[in-house]
Image (tube, rainbow, N blue to C red; front, side, top):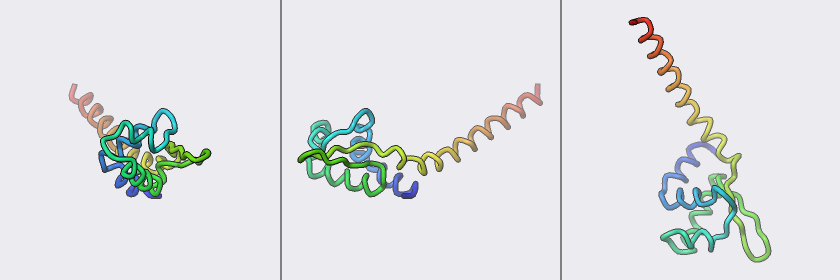
Length: 103
């Protein structure tokens, strides 16, 4: 998985809401569809995209399937975003040093 796949998967607002709905605990398609403005088949399709991007895992239990956030799937995306954060912190540090020299 690449951070591009994660960004693409999470770019869709409905898909992002489904992903966010899994934050606290695993859920079935039915549970997810109940809180979404789309049908169960649409939720299933969104989950397939999230699963392809390795952001969601699935665990069969009887005749139900529980979906959960795959935290390790977020590692590459986090590394990518942390690169920007490091740049922001460096720029902030340089600005403070610059202002300290003026005073």
